[in-house]
Image (cartoon, rainbow, N blue to C red; front, side):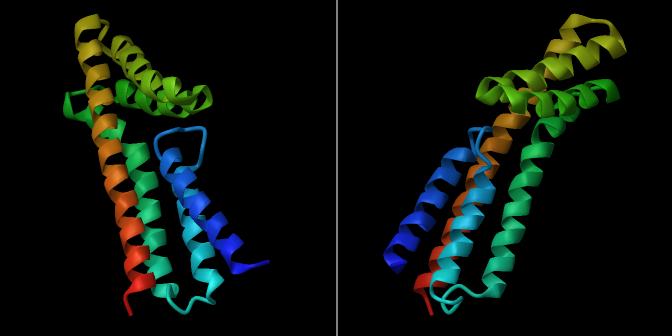
Length: 161
């Protein structure tokens, strides 16, 4: 296959991955890393070597970690109970099955349910749910920054000798 088509595929994976960073139906960071790995492979790892790929892999793992932890830290910051944090975690996992709406709503609902079970009052539970949501929004900004860092590392490695 002509290298041009490999590059088209690599760039498409990266672009779809960037979109997938915010749409839970797509494994965003995995697609980005796959596109970058393909880009490195196209020229036999001459421009983008293994050290760069390890750095990119570490950044990708960090994106996944931020995705999981951000809502939980937001809940913890507003004084969530243990059950609320467990509820937010369960909500995050369950929400993945329901697309973008599920990812936005389910952690909030999980945290609220957990807090109500623990403390039995709606007002603190709503505050914990809101804290979870704020944590997720901050996490989304952090994920975007990390994804842009991945792209920057790849481009610098590829174009700067």
